[in-house]
Each structure stands twice: as C-alpha cells, then as structure tokens.
Length: 395
Figure 1: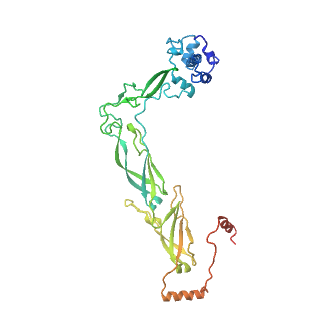
Figure 2: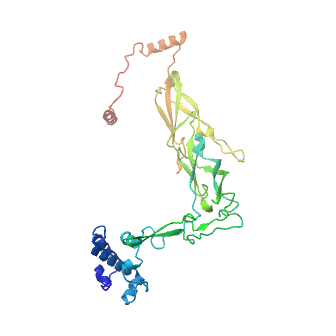
Figure 3: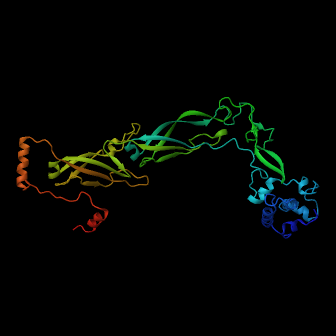
C-alpha cells in the first residue's frame, strides 16, 4: 500500500487517539461491505481498516512514523494477506475497547467468592420486642470445609494450572470471514473458566470448599424493634465457594399477638370495660403494664424493679368511647424516647336486672326527668368537609 495511512483516514499526523477512532468510525459506516458490496469499496474498507489498526496502536504507529514496518516484518502486504486485523479491533473502535474477547480478556474466574446473605424469621413476644431480649438461634448454613480448609482439593494435593487454557481461564476461537480473522474469547470448558483444575477433589465438600452444618448463634434483639425489623449479623451467613468470606445473616422480627395490648408504632392501645355505675360515679382501676410480661434472667444478681401495674382514675361521668392517654407508658423507640399508652373506655349497660335494681333505676330516671327521653338524633356520618368545618367552628 503506497498511500499514506493518515491520508487514508483523513486525519493530521498529530491527531490523537480519539480523533483517529472517530475518523475510522465515520469511514467504516460508509465503506462497510454490508452498505457498499462493490469490490472496489471492499478493498478501500480493508485499506482503511489496516490504517486504523496501525495508527490506533502506539507501537505500530511509532514504527510507521519512523518509516519502519509497523508489523515487525510480519507481512504488511495488505489487510487480506494476514495483517492480523480481527473482529475485536472493529468492536474496540466502536465500543471503546470493551468488546467481548478484547485484548487480555477477562482472565480466569476466581474460585473464592463471597457467600450469599441468609434470612431467618424469629417470632418474639411484644414485651421482648419492646424492651429487648437475647436469643439463641439454630441456623443451617454453608460453613468452611474443615478437611480442605476451603481449597477444595484433597489433603496433600493442590489445584494445578489448566493445560487447555494454560491458566488463562479462556480459549481463543478464530474464524475467517470477508473482514479477515474474527477472534473471540470463550471460557475454557476444561476448567470452567477458573484457570486451574482440581485433580483430586476433597471428598468432604466435593471440591466446593464448604459444607452445610447446623450451628447455634446468639442474637441480641434491641429494644424497640417492630414487625419486619431486620437485625444484621455480619459474616454469619453462607460461606462462599472456595472458602470465600461469609455473607451476612439477617434476623427478621415478627411479634406475636398480645392478649391485652395492640401496638401502633411506639404507642400501645388497650380497651377497658367498666360498669355503667362506675362510669357515672367515677372510679380507680388497676391495670397491668407491659413490663409485667418481662422475664427476669435468673443469672442476674440484682433484678431491675419493674412497675407491673398502675392506677387509672376514671372521672365521674366518663363516656363510652372516650380515651385516656398515659404519656411514656408505650414502647421504647429505637432512637430513644418512649411511646404512649392509649386506654379506650367502654361503658357496659346491664342487660339483666332484678326487681330491686329495676326499681332503683326507675327512681333515678324519675329524679333526672328521664322517664321519656327524647334522645339526640344526628347524621350517622359526615363528609370530610363537614368534619373540618365543625372542627374550626365548634359552636
């Protein structure tokens, strides 16, 4: 080829790599045989491709600029005569050098890889979730093989380099086409891309470097966890293949229903039913606290003093459906503070009265002029706008 390579690409002699690549892309789109099947165009495309092959390689370009043979005497008699230009070079020009099978390839796959994370679900009582608890868990996960210590080879043996790929983990496949030689790299089938072969796999783990085992872990549940909260135990998950580092273990909390309290965020709710007379006259009730469910560890020398009950005062005239909010008697928050206890009051109306009780109620009704009550009739439901209007205009 007598024409100057820089002229072929239409670039200056001091053009940088990006300018050369951009010029080649433009010409390749115009001259590619799929676009212009004319034989003269194909010859032109081969010349442009060879020019790009030389000028995109710093060493070949330097040799060409010095007037030498950029192919080191390997036969620069034309692109079609074994210049060595491959499909990879075209892909590099269009995709920035990340084409499959580019120079150097990806190399062998490592046998040692990080293990997967594991997830287990743990049901705890409401008090344990509120105030924290320590539990022992039995988990079944992959652990490091004690026989081969994760290497995968039988004792006394070791992995050896693969003879097929010579430790590269990849083998080249070359195919000829009208563009020249198409060279691609594929994972080596003999070693499955690892670059090494285990001639004598460990009998305990079958060469995987890990075995499954049941073990006991201690997990500390912090105070204030809620349904769905996940506690992370670092590096307590699955050991990776080849004895790789273990993943993490996540303990997902599920709270069992409580017979007295229901939880809403950090607030506790409960319902108290009182007789009609107690609601009318007022009374004091003794209610249990959530602390009453806390199990004290017998190994603790000095057990903490827990308030297991408290007094709730009902004012005379308490109405059914009313609520009393007790500040700071709810669930501790993960970041400090504590929620409230909301007590919903239900007034119970007696359904069976003896003669004396009925007589006394009639006397009370007469004294209060309630023998024939008219009642208060109002709509059973209101619109959102109506409720908002009443809230801002209570009178």
